Image (cartoon, rainbow, N blue to C red):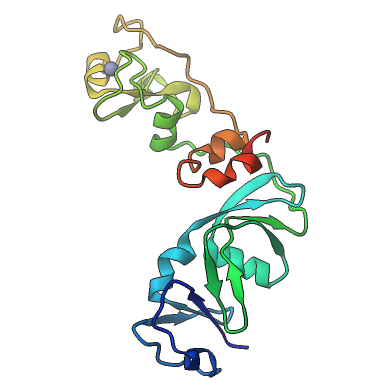
Length: 215
Ligand SMILES: [Zn+2]
């Protein structure tokens, strides 16, 4: 069955738009592509369909973030149920669906305990966007190998810290004590709990908070 998914707020749609089963010319809306699932997504819908949705395991543990498009696909396939919405609606040919914000999988997914990905961005976030040598927060940050690579220092959480360009330059290719510097904190791998992993999304998605805390 062909299913047209249109944002309720798009406007400019006549009743006829929803009658035909064939791809129709949408007034003011460019037809972007026909999804393998049979959904037609309009260009105006695209940003909406990319908005993040928190995915809970069957036991309510938050495990993933997916796009609204994917979340709707899971709901329509009966693989997930909506737990929270509040983002308006999405119109399909036959119904008006609340736009999901949090969904829950019907079947429990077994997976290894998550770890925080080792990236520059995550190193800066762990270090609270602060140079770990002088404590400065303003300006650009670099990543410093506490034990320099040419001395065998590894590219691992416990050997990487955020450093301002000045401190990184001053330390150079030396160890911390050789450079007569000191670290504000001993670098550790960040906790892999949900609050840490998903907490960075709470500014834009405050309604996720009760589903994230405690995991
Ligand atoms: Zn510094």
